[in-house]
Image (cartoon, rainbow, N blue to C red; front, side, top):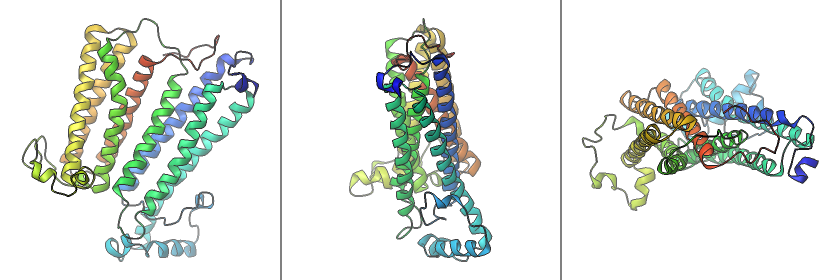
Length: 366
């Protein structure tokens, strides 16, 4: 506790290894968040998200274990519109299939909370955290708790008057998970010293900073596409609705006009495509600048981001043309998180130094 109060860990014996441990812990948490996003995507694609109609943060960790408990859980599900309007006559075995997806998703969320909270308390008590780092980690803890609340708010939107959750809440839930992932990766990356001699031109650095929020915006748009099932229509590329640029009348057929950006499947898919093109162009331009005028690890990261962006775009196109098979949709969602990790680490390296490391601490390998 003394180290936190003073804002330094320099006096703590053996502190040279502490930041390596904390960084490894944050990487494990980040990987668990990736798994959470992937399982969440599968839960959505298998229409499993409304199979558990109650939110029990503690006791909900235990699934139904007896036939009586399974019958009770199934009876609760049969009261919501998704069952009465879409799944009427579903068998108990079919219900168990969707139940296990949602239960696994919630269990993984609880595990992430446990894996984050317990080591955080240990590091805190042992005095391994500077004041600045402690605040960052507490901020991540608060964001994680908010994600649980947002997840239930999302589920609640589909329990009474809808057969599925609100696309607005789904997109917010997915985006917040990726914001938490971004923040976790950023803090982990800040626990290493920036390599000396790496250079990129100023414009490439500006693009690096822009790509992080732009990828997050694209993930939010992807959430809208998933929520509206907009990927199940307009399954051609590069044309859409017979044109590269659909007619304005079709893009803005709803009133008020702003609603089209969130509720019109054509408009939602179109803007997802356009932002994807923008990300690829910016990533490739940054790679070009890095090859021409950059050096060291910064140049290599910029080239890698260009390749990842191209790969993610290719997976997206494949997913669209195949009419969103489960395996391809999950791969596309995973690719988005990989791209987000790459641009986050790159931006952190270019825009900040490792100020979280105290003087005398040994930097980890870049």
